[in-house]
Image (cartoon, rainbow, N blue to C red; front, side):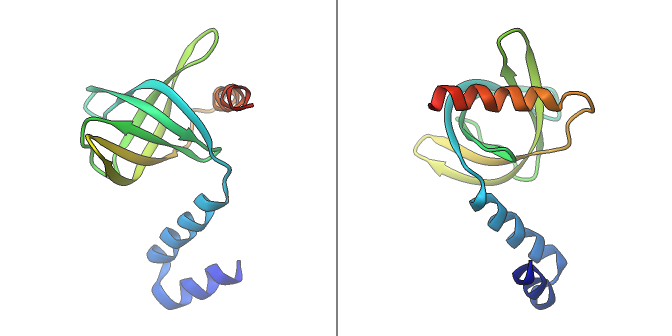
Length: 129
């Protein structure tokens, strides 16, 4: 926390939040996934994608379509008995051959649906074991 306070004093609140997000991202355990998904863009259009890996705070996604960093998207995930759309914000982008990869952070979920994300992460953990 002292590092965050020092950074905040030197570069300002907005940049310090970006540094904090980067530090937090590195502390979360990542689980490889490989599940195909559909991203739902703000205009309602859909983009095919793949979940590369997932953490408790977000996921890395791969698509063939370029998207705009900072965009809020929905990510369709299938559970054993139902599907759900998880809200996310695209934080970073990199190209990987013919694909675009995006780091996305989960945005606040609809009250009462937090268990869906927990169920999804448990399924990923079971596949990784």
